[in-house]
Image (tube, rainbow, N blue to C red):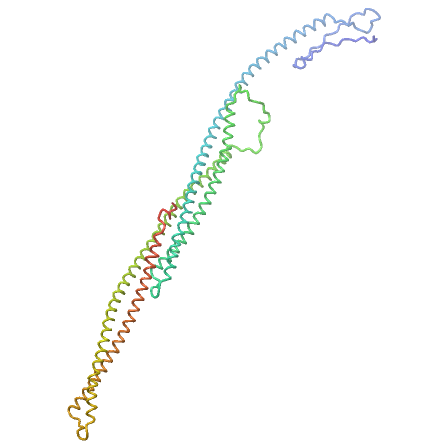
Length: 442
């Protein structure tokens, strides 16, 4: 056992220090008389009565203080619990209300997106239909082009003077140029339609992506709105309350959708304008082609009438020439017969003159018979000269009539050949000209 005697320290309450209660002065130690020389300088291990009273009074005081503080904390805790409960419920209700408003807002924009998506889809389908019509109309122009070029090639086979650059050829050349212009216009319009279809699809894809994002956001917010304090599937996610990086604000969120809808609206308006343009182009080109076709047909009809009239006049004139040729041939025969008839009287008169020239001596006299015979010979010679002259003229006239007959027959053949080309080939071929519905792309 150690020779040192431990002296107990004064009582010290740490709770009072923690609660801010001022520490009481330690009780004054009353020196006790020593029991002997052996205990000199040391105190006893037992407390004094004053320490005992001081100790339990301190305990009672501390217990009262603790009880008072406990009641205060209980009142504050109850009040805080009630206040925080009400605030939490109010905040939760406000969050639920805001989620509901957000759902309505998302639903509105989602509906607007869906409406424009449907409109773009319908516009794209209508443009695809117009594209098919333009392609059909472009294919339909190949037939008029083939007809017009074939008519021009056929008319190059006209003969002689009928190979003329008339109104029909001018109208056919105009028709060829018009068809080429129409084809170029249809190709350019088709390219515009294809470009607009691409733009519509791109805008529709942008709206669909935005709609898909809003659909997911709507489902998430709808699920959030269905959470309650009794929901079994709620969990703690402390990190989710922190501000996320690269998030947009409501203004930019609304502007993003509005910009997409504005771009879609522009494409819808462009589609509407293009659709009207295509309809007008198809209508105008169809009317222009049909009007030019009518002009060509009228020119062909007028040309055929002219050919028929000319052919009729030539045939009438040929009949007259043939009749005149027959008459002239009979005239030539008559003249030849008349010349032949003068040979006998001429021989008689010349024979008489010859025999009378054999008269002897003074009998060779130029008497009245001699003079008459000489006059008769001169008259017959003059008559024969006139008849030969007339016969020559008649033969020349007959030759000219034959030439006229050949010319008329040749020209009639030309007119017949031209009529065959114009009426039987060209005009018959033009009956295959496409109808208005085919030229319009139907």
